[in-house]
Length: 187
Image (cartoon, rainbow, N blue to C red):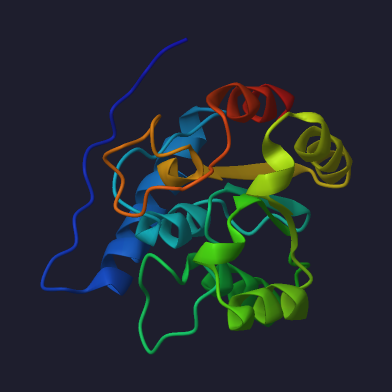
């Protein structure tokens, strides 16, 4: 395994959309030379930029390990909007939206977010159902069998607060690290 650092992408002048575009360009360059590209750091404001670098494959599956659905409606992009941005981009291009969120906390998401998830055809597994790997692994195995490429995003707030105490929104329950590892192995 050869690791290559492709540098940093920062938000300048509070222009997240430009940073997302530049991140997409960096991911696209990195993917020319590697089958696996990893973006580290930031919050989920990096998720849409990462997606932009994938080149819009027609059978893309997006798996988000997160306590939040991140489907928020907003006037401008934030860390809470990336998967709605992805869904809208894919719909505008006439592509399927295949999105699953695993470890979702009912208490950390509004009814409107669940309604948006239903509207875009998203699937999810609640954190309550992720205390062992059975339910999420069953969904993941079906999900990845139906796509050609997988975009896996992991927000550390999916972990129990005791395992990730430094996150901005620590989970009351969370998904145990061993379950997260099993999901990553399956993907």
